[in-house]
Length: 479
Ligand SMILES: [Zn+2]
Image (cartoon, rainbow, N blue to C red; front, side, top):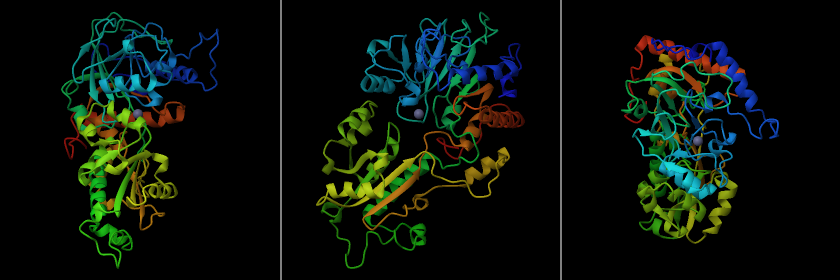
């Protein structure tokens, strides 16, 4: 990330780190993440935290439990309860206070046994002063990732070079207020850039979830996908037509529930001929699809007791009201993602013989949508925006997998809880930032180089458009 290391902010404090220094810091970070690392006396028994895990000039670490007690860090933040973000966090934690959302706090106490005395849930959307940080405040903002996930906006002076990096900030002790937006994992939305704590402000650093920072990652807005799944489930269970797309599939889907010689009865769904909907989940996340399908089918949701306890951590009254411990009282069952395959679902359906005779499986996986063939690898920003906004996703866009039969249908769903490339682009163009710091796929120099090319493109494009001018969204919730 060469050019982007120099802040575009025209103030006296614009240069935060020279590009040479930043390259060195990335090399240092790569060494710290060495796979062959073994704790010894010589290395202090712990991995060194890469520079991007500790907020510059502040005693604050984010998603850095893996590194144990980090020098001079007095506040440990957790963006959300996915395992790659809380690595090493356990019942033995004693290195300092942990700040997170209320939902995440409940989850780490339940799943990891972290002692409550360390866990400090922060109120959402409000700037809270953090003790022992030299006056830094944190505003948690809903990340649009899994339940409880947050973006953290830190605002305050630089008071200390905390962490392990050899690269020191030049601004320790200055009166300037620095502003960092840490995105954890997120799905960028207009709500983020229009948030009152963010809108119109200069962000010195944005720590970006760069999981899909590549134009090949194009997938539809979550809300369209959720609505599509709910509508498809409703039509299939009701035996309604699926429209044009179903017919294009050789009429197979269309005729699935209306086979010849078996006219649909009024009480079909109350008899043993009922249809079970199963949704695959592997950790927290994807609950919004489940709620939408449950509402469309007017039915309850069953999951095993462990999963149910995890779902209840979210303190979501709408979800709580849908949950039942009786599998026969629920038209939707939540199963591990790996179970949503024809052979396994066949066995699962047999368990409910006499109650359910058909099953529809939804397999929401991160990225199952392929870019149109022949799409450019380096498209112009404006064409990325106009092309993405022209696409819409409906129930007719969902196709059953090849192995589907008359009683068993499996649908892959392009449901992502990370930003698409297009959404990252809109997010970056709509904010006023100094430095964009990638936090995912940063292990190799070539991957970092590819990403920094895009950050440079965003930077010049947003200057053309007017710094921080929000890209016009299709909906208040998505671009
Ligand atoms: Zn995550």
